[in-house]
Image (tube, rainbow, N blue to C red; front, top):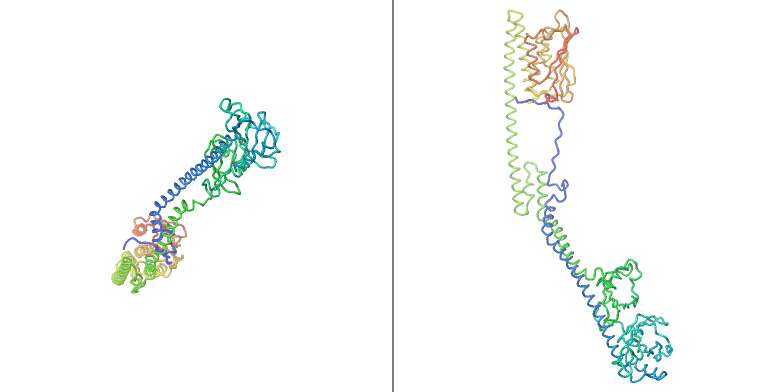
Length: 589
C-alpha cells in the first residue's frame, strides 16, 4: 500500500463553493457583465464627453469675451451719442453768443434768453454772465446778480475756452444739473481777441433729456447708464460705491486701468461694468449690465455638458436594462440550473431556451458536459465497487493463506523436539496471526484503507493471551482510543510491534514469578500518537538484550512507523514508550 495517513474519525466539513455567477456573492457590483459593459460604455463616451465639456468651457470664455466687447461697444456708442449732443449744443450756444452789442440789463434781456431756451429741449436755464462773474440776465430772474466767478465752467469760458463743461451740481431744489458755457463776443472780437470775451453764455442741461434713450442707442435690456464727472461724482449714484471691498475694482475702471470689471452686490447680484469718455469734456459714461448666472449659460454652456452627461446616464441605464433582458437573465437561469442540477434533470437544456444563439449553444454544451460527467461518475462508481470487491477478495485470500501458514506452524510447534524450537515457532506463529488479524479486520469491516483501532488492539491482545500467554499473566488495554482509526499499512507494523513487545514481556518479564500484569496504553492527542507497553515484571537491561531478535525487531518496526522508542526499567518492571509525532502521525484519529 502507499504512504499511510492518519485521519480523524469525525467527518471533516467541506468548504462551501461560492458560485461566481451568483449576484449575491459579487466581489464588486462592476464585476458582473452589466457592470463591465457599463464601464466599457463609460470608456467609449469619456472622450466625447470630455471634448463637450472642454468645448463648453471654451464657449463660456468666448461668450464672456464677446459680452465684454459688446458692453464696451455699447459704452462707446453712448459716449459718442452724448458727445454729439454736447457738440450740437456747443454749436447752438456759439451761434447765440455772437452779439453785435451787449444787451442792457433788464426784463428784455431775460425774455430774450427765455425765447432762445425754447429752441433747445436740452436746456433748462440760460444765463448771461458779465466778465467779472455776475449773472446779468437769466431765464430764472431769481439768479440775477449771483456771483459765479469761482465756478469751473466760468473760469474756463472767461479765458476763451470754446466750450466748458462743469462738474455735476446739485441745486437748492435738490436737482442735479450739468452746466456748459461758451464765451460771448461782440462784433468780430472772437477773431481778434478770443482770449478776452465780453462775457459768458451758460446753459444748465436737463439730465433726463440728456440721458440715453434706448430708442436712440441700442443696448441690452436691463442695463443702467451712469454719468461720472471729472471729480468722480456719479448720476445716479453708483450702487457699488458704498461697498469698500469693490472700491479698488471700481477705481481701476474709472481711471482707465481696466476696460471692464465684474462687480457683485449681495442683494442685487452681479453686473458687468464698462466705461467710455465723452469727448474732451472730462466726463465718462458707465454702463452696467446685470449678469444672470444662467441667462446665456443655460444654452451655451450647460446644454453641451448636460446633453452628453444625460446620454451617458441613459446609456448606462440602457446597458443595465438591456444586458439583463438580452444576456444576464439567461446566464442567471443557466447558473441557477447548474447549481440545482441533478442527474437526469433536463433543466440545463431548458435554461437557455429562447436565448441568443451563443448562450443557447453554451447551455447545450453544459447539458452535454453534465451528461458526460454523470456517465463518467457512474463508470467510476462501478470501478470503485469492483476495486473494493477485488481488494476484499485479496485480503480474504491473504487472511486464509496466513491462517493456513499459522496452522502449519502451530502443528509444527507441537511436534518440536526442544523448548527453544517450539518457542521460536510459537513466536513466528504469533507474528503471522497478528498480520492475518489485520487482513481479517479489513475483510470483516469492509474498510480497505483503515481499521478501527480499539477493537483491533483488544482482539490482538486476546489472541496473544490465548496463543502464547498464560492464565497467570493479565493483559489489559487502556487509553482513550474510542473512534480512532488507523491506516492499514501502519496497522500491520503496529500489530507486529505490539505483538513483539507483549511476547517479550510474557516470555521474559515474569521468570520466577507466579503472576504478572501487562498494560498496553495507547492515546491520541493533537494527532500525536503515544503507545506505552508496561509490565510489572523483573525488568531487564535493553543493551544486554541487543543480541536477541526481539529488541532489534521492535526498533525496526518503530522506525517503519517513524516513531521514537524509549525503554525504562525498574524494580517494578519495564516500560516501553513509542512516540509517533504529529508530522509522522498522519492518518490516525
